[in-house]
Amino acid sequence: MIDNTIFENKLAAYLTLGCKLNFAETSAIGKQLSEVGVRKAREGEIANICVINTCSVTEFADKKCRQAVRKLIKENPGAYVIVTGCYAQLKPDDIASIEGVDIVLGAEQKLDVIAYLDELKKKEKGTVFTSKTNHIKTFVPSCSKDDRTRYFLKVQDGCDYFCSFCTIPFARGRSRNGSVADLVKQAEEVAANGGKEIVLTGVNIGDFGKTTGETFFDLVKALDNVEGIARYRISSIEPNLLTDEIIEFVARSKRFAPHFHIPLQSGSDTVLKLMKRKYDTALFRHKVEKIKTVLPHAFIGVDVIVGTRGETDEYFEECRQFIQSLDISQLHVFTYSERPNTQALKIDYAVDVRTKHFRSKALLDISDRKLRDFYLSQQGLLRKALFEHSIHDNKMYGFTENYVKIEREYDERLVNVVGEVHLGGLNIEGTAVVLQ
Image (cartoon, rainbow, N blue to C red):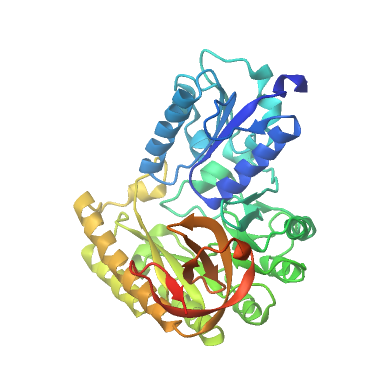
């Protein structure tokens, strides 16, 4: 049993890398430390405790994590250093060998951080606490508020899909979730704290229910009844799990935004099979067309990976043409990075770095055109917007329900307020819509 008096007057610095799910989990860790008396370090203060929540989605992410750990150690000399997250689960010994790291916590341990702090005694070498993938079973709810106005509510964790290019199932374990009742309570707490927007996040949120026997649709319907929340956004959801039933519900719901983020990963059916994805391009097209039929002004963001093993010039051209033909709003383009122990390494054809760069640029150009066209299609319309705290050159920014970024002169009275706006043309940079 740790004596909680050791935490009195201690300051903690937090650094989160990677996805919004990580941010929600860092918030939960921060809450644990706060409950025993640890205060978050303010800018300029030297922390006694450092918590780094890592990502491992690409080789570059691994490198960035190592750099971030060393930087935080240098900025907070003598601090007790805790490293967790996906990189910590997959390569704990790599992190433990970094001078200054005290403990490395895996996926099963990270949300019970107090139990591993060992009186905050610095160590000569980092101690590793991890579990095998098949022993990662705990679901700990978490909710974070970003620096703007959104809350990120973790509703699900883990993945059972084992796509050939992906290490996430090894880093986060099997699919599991909280109960609908518990997640509704968390949404009610956000509303009580004045929160207006919640993003539902997880690893594979459409697979919700493996733990409780409920469905993601059950969760969506229940959250829609929480008074005080102006809108929800559904983070990335697999196309095969985005049912027509959910799309139709969003079209008539009180609070779910007409905004979808759907991973495509490739527009070539051959490459999708090599990736071991659970859909084909015909199903993906149907989902896009279904959304646009019932929600013509919906924003549709799409993930795509370029340069995967097996992606020949012919298959990339199939992908490019398929994406060009879709009525979508924006692409999130990722360059394939080989990950150890993945099935993709068994695929013969490898794409060189220069070709990956050109393919990425080609898709980003398509994305820029589609986003501009989508923004221009909204010109002159009335939309409901939520303005954020940030200010830049006396401008404030926000997003409409269908994820159009807007700007106007700063007015503190509008922060975290949902109101009707009249959309004008694009700003000089072409990155936001100016209000009329």
